[in-house]
Amino acid sequence: MGGMRKFRHPEKPFHHGSHTRFIMIRSRLFPSNDCRLVLTAALFFTLAGPVALHAQNTDATDTAPGVGGNPSKPSPGVALKPAPAAGTSILANGDFSAASQDPKKADHWDWDETSPVTLEKGDEKPFLRLVSKSPGQVVQAAQTVTLKPAVKGLELTASYRIANFKFGTSFVKDMRFLVQFQDAGGQPIPTAGGGFVIDSHTKTWTGFSRRFLVPEGAAKVEIKACINQAASGSLDLQEVRLVALNPDDAAAMSAAAAAEIAKKETVTAETLKRKETDAAAVREILALPSRTQELKVSGNKLLTPDGTTVWLQGINVPSLEWSAKGENILQSVKVGIDDWKANVVRLPVNDGFWFGRGKPPQTSNDPEAYRQVVDDAVRMVAARGAWLILDLHRFGAPEQGAVDFWKDAAARYKNHPAVLFDVFNEPTGITWEIWQKGGEVKVKQKGKPEPRVFQSPGMQALVDAVRGTGAKNIIVAGGLGYAYDLSGILTGHALEDKTGNGIMYATHFYNWHRGWQKNFLDLADKYPLLVGETGADINKMSFIPAKNQEDPYTWVPDAIGLMQKYRLNWTAFSMHPKATPVLITNWAYEPSPFWGAFVKEALGGKQFEMKKLR
Image 1 (tube, helix red, strand yellow):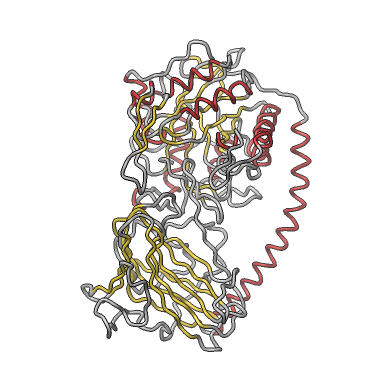
Image 2 (image 1 turned 30 degrees about the horizontal axis):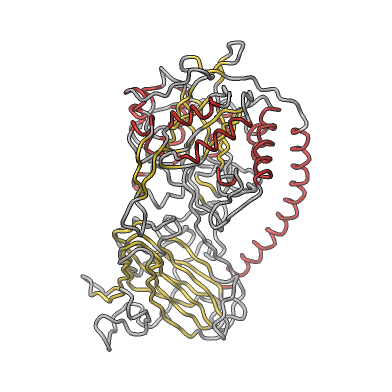
């Protein structure tokens, strides 16, 4: 996905087919009690910029702008169909109109004297501005409010706008609101409250509304508006309101929470049974012999030894790129092939895990256990007569580590009929000359004045590393622009393969990419193409302007129709309920209605019409 990973995982990266991003979002419902509340607005570790809040109510069933969320499973911290809470805000000076001590300091709001937080007049109303002036800076504004004993629930509303925002060193270095209830001693109540990421592209005043139950034993609640370790950005806040819910709304939320807990307990018991059955089925498949035939490139097609044309259509099964153990890898392979009728699985892997080096903050892992998961995935695919694309899930320019990986991995799967080698997930930020032949690469380092300089071996060197092991397996090579652009292949930068079964070029495109014809379709008559990653999600990616992301319900049929019309090989992203765009909504493998349902139909043989190119 343009190199950005669309990933919804509460404790892991937010993945979009390419980059991994973790967004921590937790909202829960709890019984209420007396409490006091701390309200905080904060900029959390951005690289630089400002933020604003403005009082507005929105439908509380919506997920926060730019936040990944499961449409079939609303956050329990939000009422399902609430009307805006009526009543007076219990937050002091939430409209920032009072500044009795200092014209730049709002009464009742606290922030570090050295922090770049200022009270601005505004055209119509005053607002609070938080500015990140340097990378990694934390900026916060807070307020403590005492709640009456009768308060059982709260609704927080505000308006905000954002300017000059850039993510920090990772995609969790963003802008967000956090809610944390505390006991009388100021200690956090771990399971209470929640948080939500706000849309970093919101340049005009935009409102939100969130409801929370007051948990048992709470005496305070801390609410923060944050720019979190970004590279830059400003956040403006206006008319922040905190209103006590009426007893009926709070009781309805509490009942919904109890029902959700009961449902989860039932699902957990059913899940344990299903996992036992699934594990037994996987063991049976692993015991079967290989049925897969070797593939070779012939013109723009893939052929078996007897001359049969093979059209690869399947799925991505992610998580080994961020987890040394993987998450339901073998079951996902089984479901993808047996139930969804895929004939190929693309399996992203990480060379650090492969060699036992771990992935920061990890410093090591069991490399043999990691490789065994990959081995088992290969065996399962081969037992079904299908194929597996082993994807070195890296971005940018290839480095020596990629050469080392392929010397080892290619030797392990040398001439295995079921395995293809995707040698470098998404090249980007280099010229076609360096892409092909290698050369000096300079990469900007956040927080450092000097770039990191290294010699890239180039993609041809990766081909040569594979062939040097004696492996003839088909090689997959992604283009530039996070593997979207393949135009350079037709202008003198095609790779050479004199001793193997050929090269298939790969493109990755999502619902914000335009220019299909020049970026990859021009190659379709000459070379076999793989759409290694593709998809669309109803939850818009916060690192892509929302207006550029087409509605999945109009984009998906055309994208699938395109791949069918031109017989492009393809692997949809992704068979994971948290790695967006999600094909499934849960580990029961229910297809997402906006993406997975279409893919499952296409894999089952349904034909789609492409009405227009993008």
